[in-house]
Length: 96
Image (cartoon, rainbow, N blue to C red; front, top):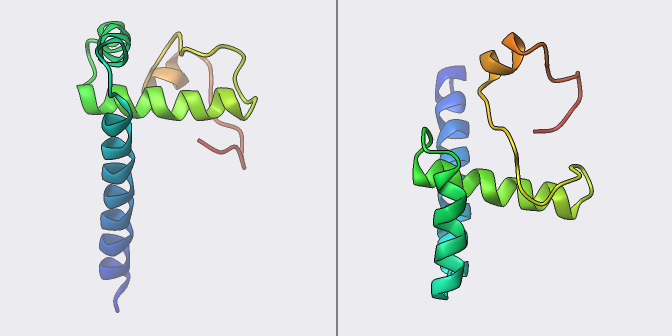
């Protein structure tokens, strides 16, 4: 297997894992109140797709439960270059 094929397979595996996370998140939205909270959350991040918003919600909730972030809801979402422009960057070895 060439390096290109390994990279492609790794990317596809990552996409498959994200798809499973999204499916799980949608399955957890079982009541009208759950959907309302999800839509209210998505309204705060209108520039992001609903799928990306669900991923942000899930990943932040996991980080909150693990004690890595102080608040249960994210207050600011930015891309890598936006964080750099704000003077913030990821430290070596820091997990996403």
